[in-house]
Image (cartoon, rainbow, N blue to C red; front, side, top):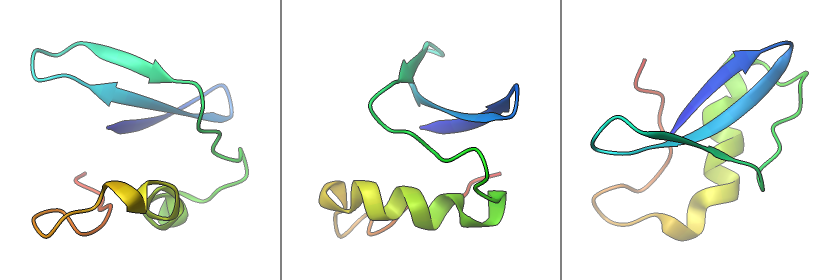
Length: 61
């Protein structure tokens, strides 16, 4: 997944292995959210998908 800032709003995308990006519309990231808080915010939303190999959301920069 990737997050992009566009027109003062955060947009969330699913990234495919072949470079296709599709927008996630059912997760809203508050516009005032600081970039330093994005990983924690998304980790709270997506914690059900964690595994031993991927226990939490992290920024890859």
